[in-house]
Image (tube, rainbow, N blue to C red):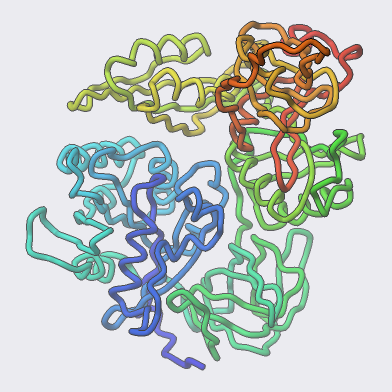
Length: 610
């Protein structure tokens, strides 16, 4: 066990801030490698901080995580924060553990909305920021212009004079290089590590003050159980000593179990930990995020973590389709309720409510991606359930019914500017800024009601032929704009149960885009495609060719069908309208009508408007 000195001056706590795919996790990999985290016989793990399967698949950080490296006489605690604003709840609480921030910006794309989102919170906490311009080896890199844009962003966010006097480094994370000036002879990350050591202040906590530790995350160890992860603000923490825990409704006397510090990619036991350190503590089975662990004799609570309110809500239903229970292990309302309650305890940005119907639950979150990641995680764990259409959370502000709005930053080739401007204008978007990036692309900023953006991404990619980039950020609240039709096209809906045939699909293809292929099982009320027109169309997708006893040349041997569109959870949530739900099982994602029977189902235009 380690018994290193408790001197807070030997610590540096730094959060890494970056937009999605700007190279944050790759840079951490290079730091770990160069600081000797991997032994000679160990395999170097790519994107080591993306420990979650979904993070590795999507190339994004979803859960905030900590690691630490040693450089000269200091230990640097590195806190990896999510770059997507849908996971902003992770960002806001993990910044409490940091004393400085590393702002990573792509040398071609520049600062984007998610960068702004996290940087705003870091500057509000008075943190010094080190700016790192990454990917300077890109052919379209424009480092000087990006640096100017970053300075403008600091000014927009009302940074102090000290914060705007930031240090700048230029990096190529994939090669593990950092440069103080572009073109200097550095071949390692030494300039970056030296800048962190010099620029990031040590923690302000006092060792001789009463113990105060804020819990910012919850972990689990199969040997010692539930772990409270957080930063010791003041005092000293030792194993097997009494402590008091301040929770939402009062206090509880606890006993500290084991203490773990983060070293490299793992945790190491500590016999003592002091002010400023980021640690994990066992021994408290009921601990929750936001609790304060304090001295039992001179206890002083810290302010509880407060987050921005959720902007979107989705209904979770127990799966009631004819195929329910065929693939999942957990299918009842009790299973779904317990899983959502468990998620709400660890994900503070999510809120869970029961409704007056036992088979329906309301989940509030920051965005569609956050809900989709939760649904995908549950699906992989063996749950079966259904999701309703995403809806915005409407609030009454100063007596006025208001809905959330988003700042939309669009980066497109110049020839698509007119198309994108027209489509967002139809969705009640207001153009705020527009400037030419100088290499055939333009960047446009709109303020659009959040409701209008549900389902927009797929049509945007079609309009820009896959060459457009779209990023959004919660802007605030605007007066409610009235009813809005979600989708302009109707659905092709199966009118009976059975197996899909090539013969039936060949006749349905001219009617629209198909979601099923030959051999797929369907049921009455299941959406099998998107109709070309505004109305829904009930179709027979299981029809077979009638045979007779007259021999004739077979003309159906060479039926050629287009590949069906297979929906992910995100694309299905974008597609569905108010009268439809997404059925999610461990082996499939289907879209169906809320009312399955053709005879009982209301017309789409009656259901969707309003």
